[in-house]
Amino acid sequence: MHDNVYLLATDPKDPCRDVIHSRDTDLKVKVFCVTEEDFSPDADEIQLYAYADKKLYAFETVNINADDAMDVVNAIQWYAEYIDYPAMEILPDDPREDHNQEA
Image 1 (spheres, rainbow, N blue to C red):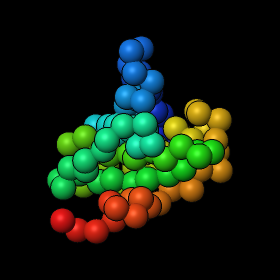
Image 2 (image 1 turned 90 degrees about the horizontal axis):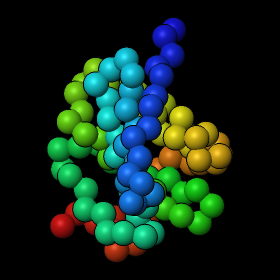
Image 3 (image 1 turned 135 degrees about the horizontal axis):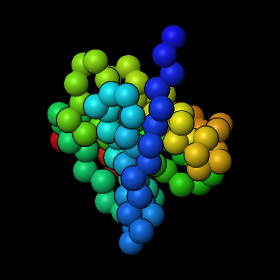
């Protein structure tokens, strides 16, 4: 099995604007610190959520294609290790009470 290598693009002006890049595929995943900023999901992308300590993160793909969809969780797990929170639980739905309903 081939292990994907991930790289992280960071914004020095905003630590909540990381983007996870796969070195070997076209996968890109934006990281949002939902507890610190507004987040409006893009209906054409995959979103997953996770808590690290008491901070809620949203992870949203960028121009996802079918071949990369299965690697999204691996990318988030890599990020969890990177931020030194390997026990991060990845959630399929937005856990905020006022955001889990369809508009």
